[in-house]
Amino acid sequence: MVIKNALIVDDSRSARLVLQRLLTRLHMNVEAVESAEAAFEFLEHQQPDIIFMDHMMPGMDGLEATQVIRSNPKTSAIPTIMYTSKEGEDYFRIARQSGADGVLPKPANQEAIMAVIQSLDKPAANDEAQAKPATDIPLIEIDRIIQKHLKLAIAEAKSEVTAGLDLTTSQLQQHQKHQLEVIQRQLQKQVEALRSEFGKELEPQQMFRKTQAHNQRLAVAVAEKVCRKTADDLTTNNNIQRVALESLITDQKLELQILIRSTAIRAAFAGASIGVLASILASILL
Image 1 (cartoon, rainbow, N blue to C red):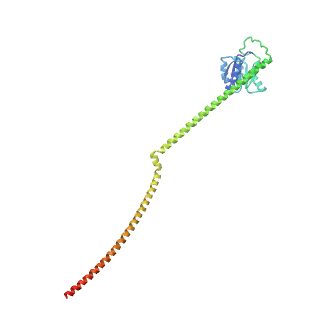
Image 2 (cartoon, rainbow, N blue to C red; image 1 turned 180 degrees about the vertical axis):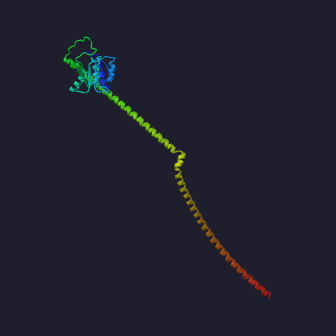
Image 3 (cartoon, rainbow, N blue to C red; image 1 turned 135 degrees about the vertical axis):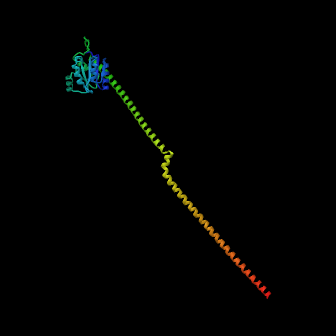
């Protein structure tokens, strides 16, 4: 069957991109939406040849969406393929009962996509009226094509992984840079707060109030030391003056004693002289 237009319904962006690339390589025009509700809105205006429907999605899941598509005469002829990681015959049977035409396992590859498309047993909604007859292709050529596409898929996957790693690394670096900037701003705020608080503490009035009690105790201690030193100096000076005064008094006593003795000797001599004169005078008069 000829498939020209495809619709992908999947809430995973990475899953949509992978399948979209694979379908584009098969020369399909691909549209993608992220929910069943968005798919219904899309189908109101456009009719794809095939729908690839994810199973687990927020809101309505893929099986319920497939049932709605089947119940709508406008969209009931569109083949719907469940695009999911679920496997097994039981799930395939449930998908068929819900109206699905097949199951494409995740992660997808071109070989699996081609197998699912070839398994469709009814024409797509937009098939041409007369399809060109299929041309037989040798198995060797098919194997070569598969190997070629497989190598391309592996190279594309490596490229996607590398790009994803680069993006993750860049995001981590940006996150770390942002975290460092936040930490730096917080530290700057703390430093500014401490600097402001320290500056207030160094203001003259604050310093005076903070050190007033200590300064008073220091002043009292200094005054006590000065008083003790002054008292000691006065005591020493008094002792020196007392010793000098006692020495002076001793000297004056010695001088006075000498003076008294000299005066006594003079008085005695004078008395003797007077007595002799008196005796002479008396002898004369008599």
